[in-house]
Length: 248
Image (cartoon, rainbow, N blue to C red; front, side, top):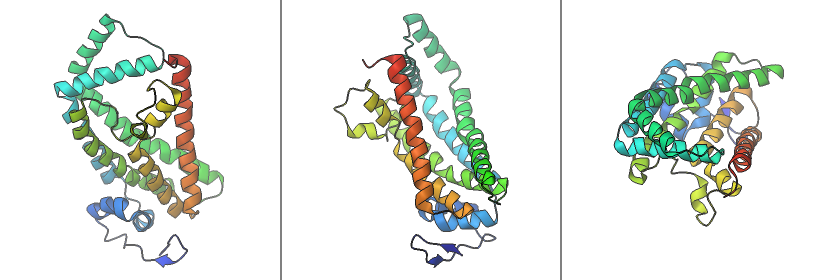
């Protein structure tokens, strides 16, 4: 049994009968009860492998097209400029060559970093923080929670790839900056909102729900804490880009 938002008990799915598909859809539609089952039987390898493979497939499918390769070059150039590193013609041609030669390795590396590397890193941080406070759940349980939350980021890649192809851009099409079209894109405020991705915010909330279930904390407190950390990182990045790249 797990506690709902109002404190009422809600039946969690049987962990022994919860299939991979049920866990994946449960993360999207029933995160609290799904994480309750995942915490009891912390299986993480298959869902992490599947989410990583999906992310790689969506990214590789886009980056192997001419549109995707040009979008990757443009993204590299914008990132360099944001941190105060202008790209000359020779540098631009070099990036074009790199985008053609290394599209698949780049997609694989990105998927690996966003998948296993990030999942193990975040799980280690969560486990360390709560273990220091006397929490008893095992590292494998924290790993399972983070791996299942990663389903949201895989879904982000599936939704984003076709939209990026149409837009001819690798930048996320689902950031809050699109609600503020009047902002100068080089301003710190615009850069901050460009880092506020709808799917990333969804992922933070889902992860917080999983953490609250695993460590028996109030979901609202954990959500606010993780959202605060995400916003804080975005503020620091936007500030760094403003300092290094200037505001114009």
